[in-house]
Image 1 (cartoon, rainbow, N blue to C red):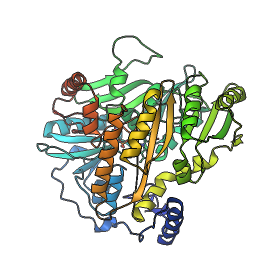
Image 2 (image 1 turned 180 degrees about the vertical axis):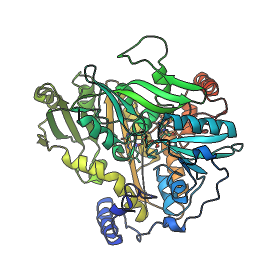
Image 3 (image 1 turned 60 degrees about the vertical axis):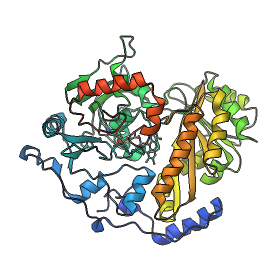
Image 4 (image 1 turned 45 degrees about the vertical axis):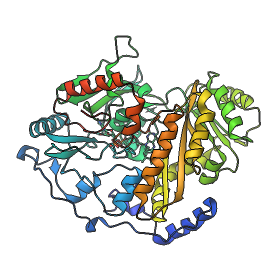
Length: 508
Ligand SMILES: Cc1cc2nc3c(=O)[nH]c(=O)nc-3n(C[C@H](O)[C@H](O)[C@H](O)COP(=O)(O)OP(=O)(O)OC[C@H]3O[C@@H](n4cnc5c(N)ncnc54)[C@H](O)[C@@H]3O)c2cc1C
């Protein structure tokens, strides 16, 4: 029980703060945000939840790895989007999977796919279930006999390390901390740390093109993947390990970001590196966000490639309690050489003295960043809507994007999570009083306003949160129609019965 994942929030049941602690937090949050926090509400306990009976049963030869247990089905119903957490908090479980399968090896994955194909059962690949876009919810069209959530977390081992090339073959279901623990034995690291690192998996990162630790250069998992192995309903797909290749469209690139609709990723070779020993960090304050953004643009175009380059606007600084003014958190790291000279040049570009420097600089921001997912649950208990949306935009359109978002969602705070020579990835946070009992309608309105504004200003519907089901209306508008046709044809070729994660990314 102690280590059971919380059924509606982030983390484990045991770590959940008491009612009094949440109420105290409400007073603090109220002061900081200028809201009157509402009464603390408690989530509906799992014991009180009733699910519709499963529509399918597993054959005897899958009995060892398949269950219809209510706790398992409820635990695999949702990801961790705001609308997921609110529904689970209120005891509402729309579209639970009929069954949950936990394959122990690739042969088990093969057997589940073969059975599901035969019975026309939808299969939803499930990594850590941290999707924030409805990527793991079995929201299906009619015509499927049922749905099985395919939980890959038992495939959790580093299988092979090529220390000469700096690469490792790793099973897809491994969670971030276990992956890093295994690589540590070789003094190596993947250094892919999304905010959800603790509870998300390598396969999930690859399937969603996750964005991690590096603010520049290796921003997405794409840059760290050498080759991928996946099972499609039409057979195995495994690419050749290569440092680079010009041989036509990349098979890896097609699977990276495929969000479980083309195949079940079982392992990947990823690029690993020695753990950094040289580090330099600094925080710099600016009089305006625009001045900070201009400094970040020059740094991004300078070839310096900071590992951390997060610019916060004043509202984001206030929300996280780290600053009253726009603030840039800068960091450089290397396993090979001192990085102080790089930092000096970056600070020179900023044209001002750092407010703090040394290994502890930016530590307050980092702590706030890591605490945020836990805090979100408490804000929901306190009657506050709390969600994020993110995009990427070229520098020339940044001002217009900020204006458009401000007009659509005036309370949204902003930070850059990643930056490129040609533009940043702005990330927005919304906290506002909830219309209790109508949070989903409120969220749907906010989401539509924000997404329309982002698209109209020329941004992408997502830089790293993926598409899933929730971003579909905007993704469908963003992508070229000819590409949609090609993706549909590829899905039909690999998955003729459309059993893999139907409704995500594309429809028939
Ligand atoms: C608090 C919080 C912070 C977050 N921070 C970040 C962040 O910093 N960067 C970022 O990129 N994202 C972030 N996310 C989003 C989410 O964590 C990522 O999308 C992550 O990559 C999902 O991994 P997962 O293992 O949890 O996958 P799941 O949520 O289980 O699945 C995500 C999608 O991938 C598919 N999938 C999963 N595993 C496989 C597999 N082995 N084969 C085929 N398909 C598969 C699923 O079907 C689904 O469509 C955050 C989410 C939360 C809740």
